[in-house]
Image (cartoon, rainbow, N blue to C red):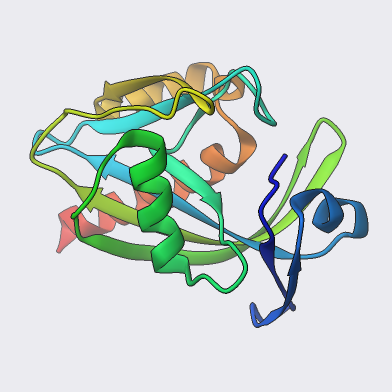
Length: 176
């Protein structure tokens, strides 16, 4: 679980305080998270597999994701998580969605406001935060859609929701 103080928010996503993730879950307090998908110049999407020692272990997830720390803005949190988890810095973040979700992972209810970002990169060189990420993988959009359809529980619940929104964003971008 998260040891840093994270931002607690009200039903309109206005900051109302801070505390631990454990406390937010125990008391049903809404908090903020960021989710980032990275694409290379060929359109492949970077995924990370959650490590065995984090909550919701051994599942595939966004390229980078995490809580918004107390006093931190969404964009800063997205940049921090991108650098910490997969070593990507200096790229333009495109905010593509802002939404509320309630995720029930094995009886643990998480109430969150999410900001979803897209990042394009001209390199596939990444690192990984070994304490949280067990592996990274570049996968084509078509392969990822098939994988998600055939084995949805390989992914975190939050990632499945984010991917649905991300694929809609990509489809809309192609129609422009």
